Length: 381
Image 1: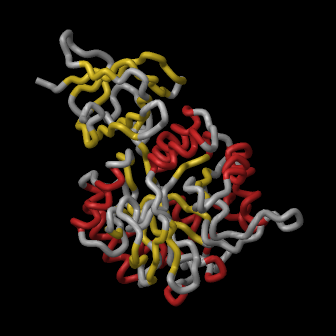
Image 2: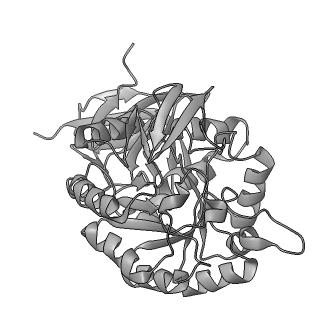
């Protein structure tokens, strides 16, 4: 007999709005519309029920790197983020040698086929040396469409996104190639002008990789990529809401101009997320994490984050004062749509996977369910 659970009494966030004293019924691994009489009830009065978080840009966690870790280490990193509410995680790679990246793509594509990760994201090597951030400049290259195609093919249908500096030679052709193959072309680590960014969007780019970071600032005579990315309804902007990458006013500005339907909260997490301060490797570069802020040992650039999406949610609700439904769009629904998995995850609707996060009245994470099973039990002492 199927396992039934009735999660009752919470503020339930649905695509249509908030239902007070609502119920979510879980049968097996799915959300369903009804439960048999006598099904066990979990009393979640005073809590929030929201869809599990979807992180489309994540480099690791729990001490494990998605770029260089073993399969077991990658699974440990994924589990770390699940414990923090991210029931769907894309594995992002930093810049590396092409042969190394194609090997990693083949290895991790198996985890995607098994449903452990939601696909692969190549952040580099096709990025600008002017805006390299925590990427090894010696390994950067122009986005030759043939080499972009090589990475996509190595991922065996599991490539979800490639970040490009689209102003570089081959950039626009590579955007078109990715669009033709159903892979997100993301503009990031770029030194593009406003006009060059518009050209890339017209060619098929649909995402801004961590808006504001690793790109020219917004200028009144040279508006650069930020203005082009915020004004175009075809673009979803990634935001790292950790208090380090963005000033609250910059986040508010992005939400005001893009609207909740065009924002995706990401972690851009590296190994230290959910693990602690210390020294780590991000690709070929050494990183020091101090007070939860990751910076390159050489050069002091910010090197990803130690963010988890439960912290991003709480910050958005308590510091940025965003409406909860808007946060849910940015942290679950929008990335699920971009990744092509909204038919299964990203909202609390009958027929979808029972991927659910439980938050208390102060927006602290209290429970995590993935495919109908508690990873974090909200009733545990």
